[in-house]
Length: 450
Image 1 (tube, rainbow, N blue to C red):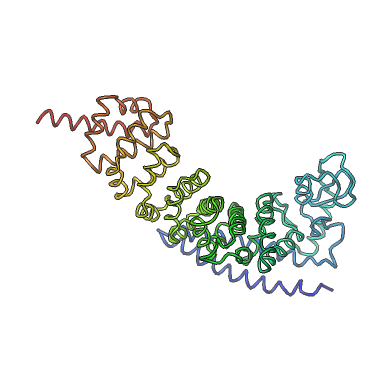
Image 2: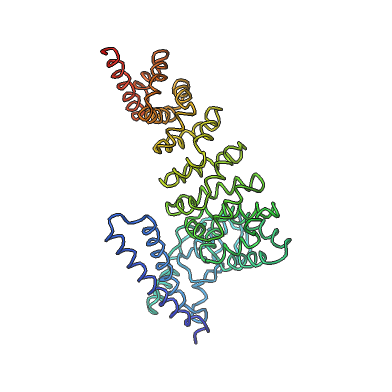
């Protein structure tokens, strides 16, 4: 007789799958019917497909009851049916991802017998694999899929440990701090622990329970550990959308960019950078007001935080709406000042080049003396990428403001800066430099004729 609760959950799974299929049908229809569909629609369609795939697999596993599954088909570590059985040096059979993880963690003993291993070579157990395949086939059960990413293997022990740590987040302050430190460490070292958070929609809210909006830095050490844990979680692709769409995460990250230890602020900026890898997240983060505190953090100039702030600003400004927000929040002034002070020139020139497609940004650059600064970098820098960004920005400024042609002509007459770039720069730099020189020569010709 089946264990109570195992088969009862299958109707729920079927219902959920049906709802997801209907949702997927609408999303695919929108993609096919609308010429200018939003990026978020494709992101959502991919997410629904991923959930459906997981449900399909889980449905087949739920049919496999512990009371009927032969013991030799279970991995001694996971206690689940094996998808890729292999033999250890001691002769015991394990599921490959679970024993590989055991070995990757530095263990050199057999988990079952505790014998020291003479070697760590894992030999496929074709006989057990065939027996499992035949057993599944006879019962109409889908054969377990071998796990591709060994580092993301999740065990029941891991799930239980995560649950106990998250429960401590609603306990005493000392329990919260202890659990937060352990979660920070586990999510840094173990991809499988990061992956666990994507299995549950309430894991992240439980994690952030101790941080009250508006008072997140009440306990700076706790805030630092939890925000760093969010950074670690954001590395896992399946967590990016889950985190950004949770109403707690982005506001707490923005608040933590503003206040906390410098490591907290830096890691909050790094988390925003990581989450902004998805275009749909860029829009969510931009609307949250994140750009102003990121620009302020960059302006403060702390070495630990500047790079993370600059990286986040760059990523966010890949979306048109966020360029305007960054310009309105004073990004041009702050970035240009840093460049003039020879700080993070490479990274900040890339952002400035991106912002140069915004009219107000170009006007500001002209007013703030960008032309002399950019010409100086072209003349002195050994970085071809920096020269390319500089001449691209110059080209835009000069098309917008004819009063700057005089400065460029003086530089060209004195040093031949653009002529040299037109001969030896990157292909894009050559094009931009030649375009400026042609306009200079045309203007000179017209003046001479007049």
